[in-house]
Structure formats: structure tokens, C-alpha cells
Amino acid sequence: MEDEILEDDPQRVALEEVIHILTPLREHRQTSAERRQRQAEDELRRDRECLAKARTAWIDERERQHEQREALAVEHVNQALKLTDVDRWHDRERSLLDQLSRLRQSIQQQTQAVEQQQQALQQAKQDAKAALRAVEKLACLAEAINDES
Image (cartoon, rainbow, N blue to C red; front, top):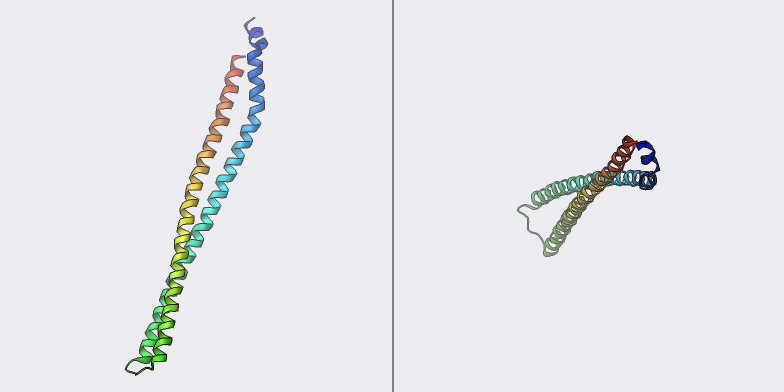
């Protein structure tokens, strides 16, 4: 008799229908959230690789320039230079420093991109976790209804 009452209960039937409708939607939302999390992880990995390359390029360029400066200094030691030669040397120095400055700016931009992507990944993880919890709650509710039967 009690089973008949539970089966004929319109609220229970409506709840089962809602669960049946919501389950694939929430599973889809969970899958999408997990995919966004993986994409954010991939993007963070790529950003970190770019940052490492930018740092390596800056270090290599700095060392190359240091060697160039030493070679120029050795080449011109104890020599009188014309003003035009000094101006050319100065322009070359400025150009080298500008190149290092551009590389440093690139490193700063890449660092900011990594930080932003870390935040995006954190949000994606939270979204995926929330979507998983929603699916689990719905599964528990469905299980509880089935256990009552």
C-alpha cells in the first residue's frame, strides 16, 4: 500500500522527471567545465614556455652584448678616436640597450600573461568542481528517491 502511494505521488513523479531532464544538462555542463579547465592548463603551459624562451633570449642577448662591448673596448684601448667614431659607438650602445629593454618588456608582458592565465585556470578549476558537485548532488537525489521505492 505504501509503495502505491509513493509511486502515485505526483510530486515524486515530477521530481523524477526534473532529475531525468537535469542530469544530462548538468553532465554536459560538467564536461564543458572540465574541457575549459584543460584548455586553461594548456594555455598556461604555453605561456610559461614563452616566458622561459623570453628569459633565455634576454640572457643570451645580454651575454652577447657583453662580449661585443669587451671586444670593442679591447680593440680601441689606448687609441684616439674621432668624434664620429665615438658617436657611432654611442649609437650602437644605445641600440644594444634598446634591444635589451625590448626583451625585458617582453618578459614583463609574458609574466603578466602567466599570472592572468593562472587566475583563469583557478576559476576554471572552481567551475569544474562546482559542476561536478552539481552532478553528484543530482545523482544522490536520484538515488535517495530510488531507495524510497
